[in-house]
Length: 219
Image (spheres, rainbow, N blue to C red):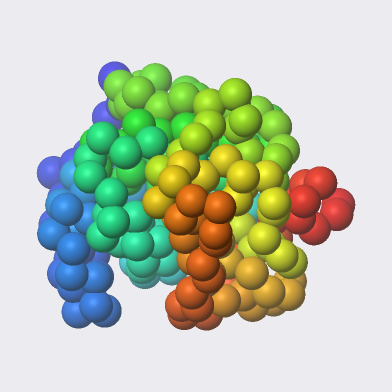
């Protein structure tokens, strides 16, 4: 059992949720998920005291855990459209925090990670926290064809373009949320599949680590 010292970090988590409200996150289901999931458990203990600041933090393999606002922004897009039993794919497991937030919302969560060290660490965290999240080690730009279709797909890394396999793995009325742009900055885009048609809408700008893979940036 993890000694999570939550008597110390619960007030910080409440402050984080209040800040998310002030920044425009209004979906109560999402805010309750952020109150429930202990972000400090998804970073090294050296960062526990700053885990609830609205900033990215380093994790293994030169990657980062996204700032809470970014996670909340992407999650809110999904929560706005899909009930708690929806099937959601996350591309880029990283620390596992985004997947845990989706799980707290009651989604059936599938997540893919290309870095083995992050994959193994996330598996261990999910097991310790009792989270029923299905994980895969592999190229996330190719999606998870064996588990398709997905009601929603979230990509937590910046891509040069939309990976075609992810569009193809969306269910009818499914949405792909993905940051697209250059290495330094990207614009969040939402692809909504309706039958054989796909409609695109644009959202805010963010900065993510690059999405590496066959349908993303090359190593």
